[in-house]
Length: 191
Image (cartoon, rainbow, N blue to C red; front, side, top):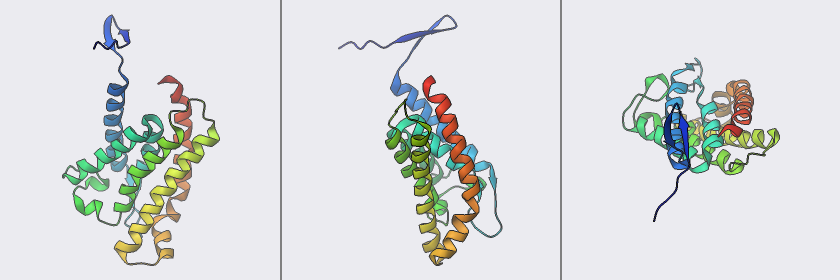
């Protein structure tokens, strides 16, 4: 069985356009972006949760790659960290991060990317409201996982978990939500 793949021309060289190859490359790109997002961090003295750019890239991964490849990029990021590569915030690595105070946020990344990809489903005609709502749902999922984990790992009540794991991050989350939505809206027609 012969399969015809569309070909293009780049600087006089023939290239093969393959959706699966593009998605796999995109998955790798988002793993790298997650690492960079973890390295760009602002630690807060009163909470074990730092401010990072990771949630921004989680939202974009689901929107740009779809639910399967987006969540796979997040799972691959977690796998690399679990294997000991210093990919987590603060150049951290190992299972202690996955099962530590910020582990809920890390787990939430996989599910949030899936959720964003599920709701957008490659819909090139989605309006800004649908994109914002989908990404807001992803953020809510990340914070739900993160706050729950903080509550149980630190042995604190729910209101203290909100103070440590949500309230300080809301202004930045809104900025990341708007930026990720805007970037997705401008890039989606080019893929």
